[in-house]
Length: 69
Image 1 (tube, helix red, strand yellow):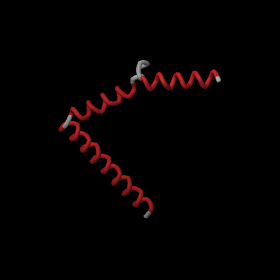
Image 2 (tube, rainbow, N blue to C red; image 1 turned 180 degrees about the horizontal axis):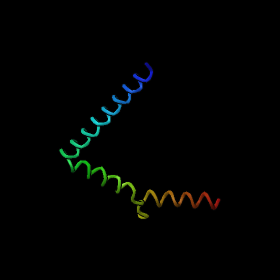
Image 3 (spheres, rainbow, N blue to C red; image 1 turned 120 degrees about the horizontal axis):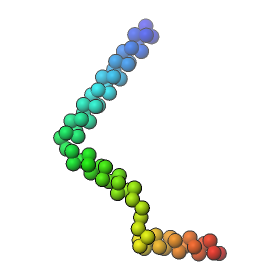
Image 4 (cartoon, helix red, strand yellow; image 1 turned 45 degrees about the vertical axis):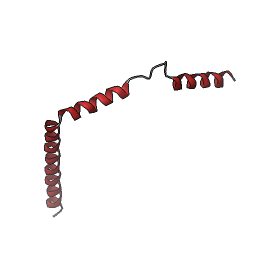
């Protein structure tokens, strides 16, 4: 009986996995720009902050003053 339950669980998991893949594929086909926007957002977040940012300058000054003290 345990074998039957295990097999049934595996079948259900495989079916759910297949449904998720189909949903993901149709979502990408329906709106390819949304997928590109996600990748663009990831690339933008990976970029290093600019040294000219006033908040970064302030943090660097506070850091240096803390180190010197």
